[in-house]
Image (cartoon, rainbow, N blue to C red; front, top):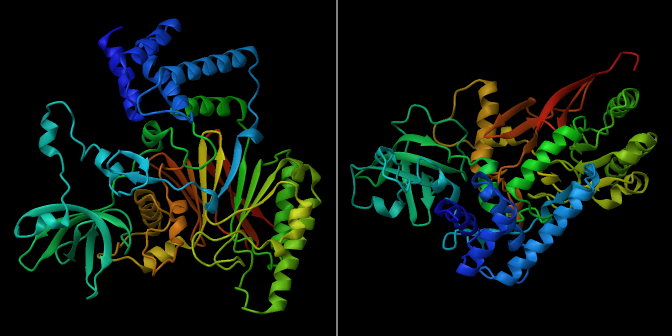
Length: 519
């Protein structure tokens, strides 16, 4: 075997933090030879084997030849069964709805370079090409940017530094940047315009500036941390089961993506937001949407209904308001049940909004109270009462759904220099900020309270395939760093709007349902 093939084998297993003895290396070489694997396919083959090996319960960091042999035989049996009978994709068996309180908790470990029991915030930043040095001599090394910590500023007035940290106010009310070593006050007097994005208290930022005699950092540039594409993260951490529904390799993901395009080209998901059940036009609007589905034989696989499900918040202790709220859900249940073709094939997902009745008002929010949705549960066989946020796993795709008035909350809490841009740019800035921060709510807990034990359910790492930012703000759709982000708009008034998502294209379309006057 050539040195190049050996290097490729070692590269894959080292990524999973495994070491190989001579006997194991020989076994892997024999496997490649047995199946006549070409050089360019070595890494893909090893990726599949390493992933399956990592799923075994009795593995050590040094690959055990007995366990490896068992894994290999199991994979051969699986391939043989697949060759005998290749069935069409079954969407139901690859469709999962994940609530925030079900997601596994993973922490990043700087020491081991993988997800274990410790945190670090700069893992993907240091992998970015602007920060990670090449192992080969290159002129590019001269342009490499080096991150510093706040403790390295002391005694070095007049020098320029680049820091990564969290924006926060100190006890004196001054805006600072904090890292694990301390903090430094920021001086924005010389900054004309920040980089793209919305900079809020609680978000992470890259700041470049000159350290002054007054122990402040005079900012000359500020930007968001670089965003890492989903494919990059998955290629490194494909063995990590972030959603708790089974992990797949990048190779498996790519195969699923191709088959979805070929076998499920017309499968759609519907997304609706602000479905005000106490508005007199909402149920007629839903009825017309269902009628159109039946008339055109266009039955969506999933219909996601996001709150608020009421125009006004329910007064505390007002039993009449609660009764009306429940009656509105009962009326919706009767409407949906009157379309048996839809109820037999379509999953209905209910995501609560800020005004809806749930157990808690912090993020993540629990699902709607079961006592208020009993008729929906009894009449709709495929109904799911989700948390906010929640996720849908469909084959290789991950779709995150978040119902919050994110735009207004972010704009109210911008710090430093506020952007002076048009609405279209604001939409792009919001999307960029959320994805660059890799978090649905990059704000301090005094601005947006969150449950500390479940903050990981708000994370966006690896980047999802699609992100639904259901918001009362204007609707939009933007694809950034390969992640498709859209706001379906508000399903209210005489012109109802919603979005359809097509997994075969990982893209959404904006839909308008015009109500005739006689309706």
